[in-house]
Length: 469
Image (cartoon, rainbow, N blue to C red):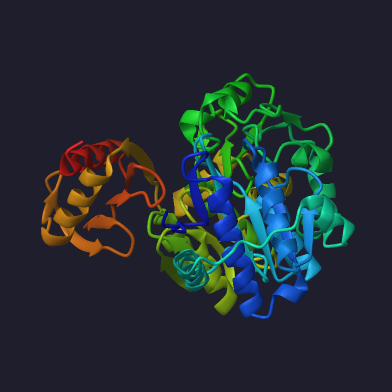
């Protein structure tokens, strides 16, 4: 099969696409790449999440690394992606591999490559990997592997505690003592994922739900979006807690519930944290947002005099800018946020701690912090629809939008088009509609933002009509 890397890594349905044979092909190409780039001698960090067979897939990657003479650090248990990425940085490894499908449904698993800087592989790197996988298949390249027992006996595999060094970094970045003294009633939903237990260990007394190992993730994708956080919202609404934090399946994304028990989207989190980092922690630098991210970031960056960059969807694009520029913060609509002074990587756990730090410093809740900013820059409403679509319909829609110009949508004249990633239509009052086919799933995503919630609904309805769904 043809291996294609999406917004962050290669993912596929377990037993259909994501098989031991295909993982072996990708792993062998990865080892060939490390050898070619002179990185193999620095070793490889390998981690995994709580998905079905993740440990076994990770061990297969280790066996192939050992077969190619590359030493590995294998995490001694399930681990969040940001902890594995920090391990790459801390150990000076040549790269890292994380077995995870992140927020995707439970039938998926995936292979994320982390480069030596401890962040998502750049598009140029994943393109080379795709080409190497295809060339290896065409040339009959043999997969070199050593049994795990043999690799351990040769000293090519070392069990690695990813948590300790990662916790040291978090303690350097966030004032954990201040948060503990504030004694904020907080409940965490790790969504049965790899972030389970991490925040409660850092902040004793923190409540946690959905913490058991459950590869089916309770029957829903481990994605911290509003429709998946009903239990968390009910707990906060009960009055027991002042805030709820949610992590996706590999804990590199963040979601939240505010003091009113309402979903607090990634757009709102980005806005609150950008202000916190700049005004309270005294940090400066550029700001990076993806094409599907709120206008509040544009307005807040302008208010603070911070340069703003926009990228296609996928943290790998943000990572590239963080490597090449002085970037204070970068983020995407799906809850992936990264900050200066850390690694160029999404980190849901760190973002959750920063939200608590903002609350501890101000004595205010998340909603209160957001409203103070909205009162200055304007009030915004946002919603996203995920719609099932087959590949034929997806290709027909793309071809139609590329060839047909849309001058009005929902009775509003289109003032600007942005086709950087998907099809974004911007209107005279700054409201917008984005129509974007997913790169990893049979899904069409519709996004809209406006100053009026009824307009958001109207634009999304118009998007469905355009897509004929």
